[in-house]
Length: 218
Image (cartoon, rainbow, N blue to C red; front, side):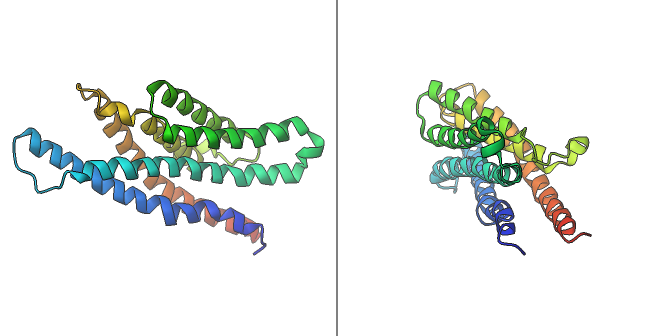
């Protein structure tokens, strides 16, 4: 195993160590929060402590940010490999600078989205972060498996990242909306995101196996 190959496992390692445990925690708190809310709506006494809602929001925000960050790590390896292979700093300096700036600006936008308070800024930074993810994902050397998009780790990942960006953008509006439209949208979209995360676990393991076979000449 070459030293550069260790860069390949940063993305899956972060997913296993950081993201997937958070998915379990957030899912548990979301269920607890839902059950407590339903009990209170029926004027029943709930044994679930009020803090579950706060913890769900706090850890959910870190999960959403982490998913987008790990997506950037996943895109960085193939794009960086392509930059080195083509020596873009010498052959196409504009594209080289463009790609570096896209990574930096997307990461900065994600940071500001995570910390934004006003709705307009959340909307702006969510849009910028989403655009950055999509543009970087369309670059050369990013394996997309477009002919099999329905079982593509790339498409699952990009979709999940965009859903997490949307969640970060609307989280404060959920508690202001008395009609529960934002809350219902949040529940539906994140149930779909949970299915995508499951799919990513399967497709990610498959892709690592295929990459290993390719590198071994199998």
